[in-house]
Image (cartoon, rainbow, N blue to C red):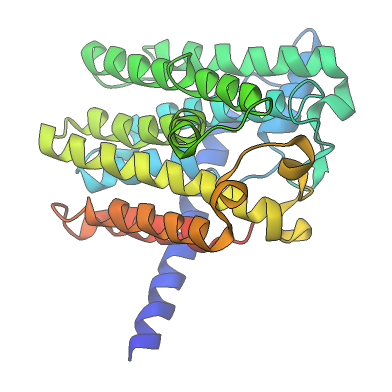
Amino acid sequence: METKVIVNKDSFLEAYLQDRRKIVEEALHWYLPAENNTPPEIYKAVHYSVFAGGKRIRPILCLAAVEATGGDLASATPVACALELIHTYSLIHDDLPAMDNDDFRRGKPTNHKIFGENIAILAGDALLTEAFVLLSRTEKIKFSAEKRLAVIQEIAQAAGIAGMIGGQTMDVLAEKSKPDADVLYEIHRRKTGALITAAVKSGAIISGARENKLQALTTYGLNVGLAFQIADDILNVEGDRELMGKGTGSDAALGKVTYPSLMGMDQAKEKLRQHIDTAIDSLSIFDKRALPLRLIAGYVMERKG
């Protein structure tokens, strides 16, 4: 009986992720300017990375948070898409020779390998800017100006110096030092945790969730974000290149400090489990509408690519 429940949950999650991914993909095609605009080189570079595949976890988490708090999916879709544009920009820049110098992303050559470093940098800049163009478009965003401003502020802070940019900077600087666990936590909290937290908080803001639910989702997002980065660190050591669509071993080659390198693989996996347990526990005040959020947390821990 227990096996049957697990299978059903796995099946439900697979169908859920596929359906929400389809919603996001279709909306991205709708919101993103077409490739035949001028100059075509930048539009092609943007489309190349946005539609190169990907799990769409951040936009899906936003939509799942909206569902968990009783909101409207349609009104949240532009926000979900904006989150994916920001995430894609960060990947383009992460892959650059001056950063991680990766040749492949999602099984395809990285943006700079196809379009050159100059266009890749501009494509990342364009995606970050277009995300906020989308968030500010009143004809697309159907909730109040007050909520829209709160969402823009939340996402901007997560993407900026206090969030993703700050985390990336700390990550680069950490290659020249030996940070302790507290520094590594702060890198992960900003680099990956901030945007994931903003995704679920934005969903709660859109729905007009009460403070206790907003705080619960903040705890959930932070812990899922930290777990996601630890899982990435683990996969960089023992992941399957085919499933991941990119090389492994790059963290060690670049001298990056990760949880596996700092405390060993067993303790890193235990840390991952602790964050997932905390994330799921934080959802105790929610009803069955939060099931997707609960299952996505488990997916983050068990993913292979």
